[in-house]
Image (cartoon, rainbow, N blue to C red; front, side, top):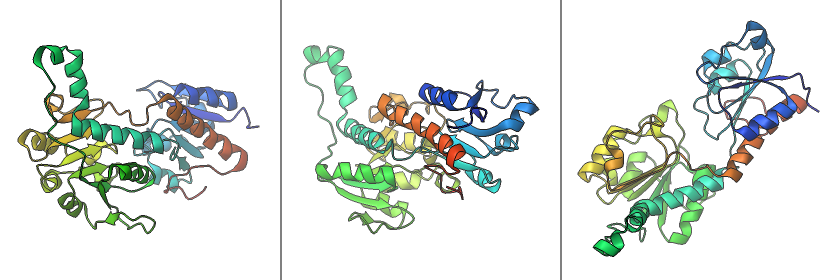
Length: 319
C-alpha cells in the first residue's frame, strides 16, 4: 500500500470523489481558494505530490522543494506550468480518454442545437407561444449537406469526427501534422480550412500558439452560412470579433461551451438569437467526472508505489 505519510497538496477545490480517494491513500493538505499557497515552510517541505483542477503555476511549483508529481483533473492542463515542472524533474499528469466520449457527444448535441435552434424552440413551447402564436419559426440552417472542419484531430477530435459520419457530412481537418490513419481531408492551414468548410469545430487546447487564433479573418473566411462550435478552450477565440461577426451576419451562428474569461461572458452574447451557449459542461456527467477523479488518484498512487504514472502530459519526460 501507499505510505500513508506521503503528503499531497490540494490547492483550492477538487472533485469530492478525488478528495475521498486521496484521503484514503495519503495525508492530504487542502488550502482555501485564494489562499492556495498559504502554508508553513514545514508543510511545503514535506509535500511530495499535488492534485489540482488545472491550477499550478511556476510560482507555486517553485515553493515546493520536494515536489515530485502534479496530478491534474482535466484533459486540458493550461493552468499547470508543465514546462517549468519538467525543468525541475516534476512529472505532470492529466485525465485524457476517460472524457473523450462525453465531450464528443456534447459537441454533436451543441452542433444540432445551434443549427436547428432547439433550445429556443423548447423555450417557445414552454412559454405557451405555440398555442398563442402558432408554430415556431423554421430554422434558417440545417446540418444537411454541411462540410465540417475540425480544428484539432486528437483523441476527442477523432471521436467527434466518427460521430459526424452517420450525419453524411463531409469532414476535413487541420492539425500541425497530417494523420495517416484517417480518410478525412487534411487542410494545411486554419484559414484554408475556414475557406473550404461551412462548419468549424474547435477542439484545441490553450497554448501561446492558439491564443485568439479564431479571429476576424478566420470568421470572415467561414462566411455567412458558417457555423462555429467551440468545445476546446475559450482563449483560442477573439470574442469581440466573434460577437461582431454574429451580429453583422459575417457568420450564421455559433455554439459555445467555453469562454475566454469563465464564468464571465462577452457583453451582448446571450442576447443574440444565433448563439447556443453552455456553461462549460462538455464532460460534466456524474459517470465521466467520477472516472476523471479516479484517474487523478490512480496517477498519484501509481507514482508513489511504482515510480511511474498512467497518463503523463507530453512535456513530462518520465512516465
